[in-house]
Amino acid sequence: MKKKNEVDVNLLDYIERLQKKCKNGKKIKKLNPTERIIYLISEFEAEVNNGGFDQFFTNSTGNYASETIECLKKIEALHTASLLREAIDTIASAKSEEDLAEIEEKLDKLDDKFYEYEDNLEELQVRYIKDNIIN
Image (tube, rainbow, N blue to C red):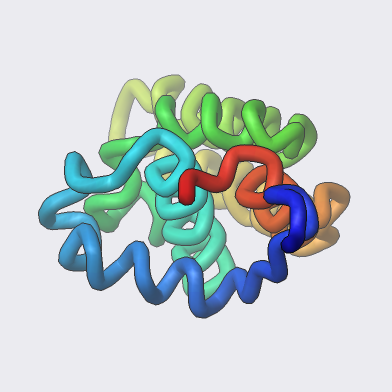
């Protein structure tokens, strides 16, 4: 019998199960704390990879931005958490329509930093699941 931290985890399969369980975020309260952490990180990562921080904030997943920072910290993705914090602060600094071009430029730079993947999000998520798996 394998110990819980030796359990094989296919992250994509796990995320797909979470998406079904919470109806793609419509029933997010159905997720336990570990599942919620992985779900929010996976949605954040998918949005940023698809259209940058701008897309993340434009879609409903952006409603969980502050919680996502905490999720990233829990899996020890501290660099990525700091990028998201900077993106939130950048958007919050907008005072007028004229600021939009400058904000877009700052978010684009944050996108580039995100795409460097200083934190290996897949590895960190798998480790977190193994360490916190609920049987």
